[in-house]
Amino acid sequence: MMLMHCHELCKPVSMMIGVNLALAFVNILLKKVLNEGVDYMSVLTYRQVVSFIFMAPLACFYERKQKLEAPIICLLFLSALIGVTMSQCLFLLGLGYTSATFACAFLNMVPVFTFIMALPFGIEKVNIRSKGGKAKVLGTFVSIGGALLLVLYKGIPLTNPQSHQHLENKVTSAPATATLEKRIIGSILLIAGCILWSSWFIIQAKISKKYPCKYSSTAILSLFAAIQSALLNLIMNRNIASWIIKGKIEILTVIYAGLVGSGLCYVAMSWCVKQRGPVFTAAFTPLLQIYVAVFDFCILKEEIYMGSVAGSVLVIGGMYVLLWGKSKEGEQYIMKDTQANEQDVECQEQCPKS
Image (cartoon, rainbow, N blue to C red):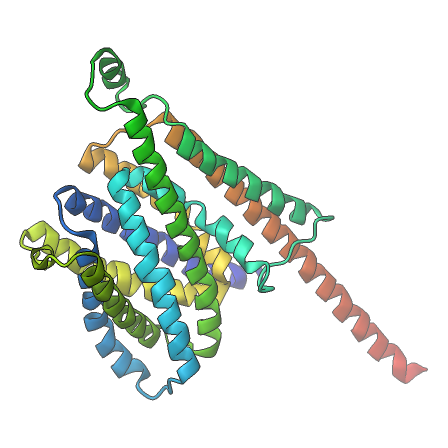
């Protein structure tokens, strides 16, 4: 029984580890092309177009017999708007104001936001009198404290402390307040993006129950997101030149982000949400920051600061305290169900004797 449970858990765990590694490459490539001046909304639009072109044939081949009803279409449109178009738009804007490592540090808040949002819908429950319930509340507050530390405290660079000393001795034209303002704006955008991204997990949990077609739902999601992103880009930026992508790295980024980031990764996450729930799927987000921090330092040569590390430790620590509380409460519910079933069996055995 235990071996079977481990086998069932192994597949979604390994899948989510792979998903976050793939998304780490997406974020590094996106940061690189954004630094070179490529329009973020054009990248977002093309990314969704590539995803739709790739996913549509798979949906037609594997799930062509499945019926698509109007309520599901409305849910997919809302899911695309909240979980793809707006969340990725805000994330890319925040990424432009900060670094890839800093931006991914905020993604660690996604499991906490997902848990908080799941409470009103009855997907998650908290028994404040139990150890598990107390752990959930404590973990939530610790993670929020870590997010605040990320925003308000930068600290010294850990990767190259000498550069920090050099910058302190050097008179720069940009005041410290301008850097702080840029950091706060980026943080607000990233938090808003994370809240919307968390909402996607909740919406996807509802879609998965009513329409369990992962290829079709991802293809339709990408189509809606491409249309929404294109319209938003036309409203925000009427310059036709911003739509043109020339460089090899830019084209490779769009193809990879669409094919893997918005295609295969969304299919995998939709499957995991259906199998293990939204909070479990979101719980692997901290792996993304670890991957990105390594790639960020090795490829983009970005500095890693004390504030980012300290805030990330608090966010990740709080998140896993929350998850520990969730598993503890889950064990208690299983024990109660087992005891109740045993009592029912005893009653059934005693009834004929009486």
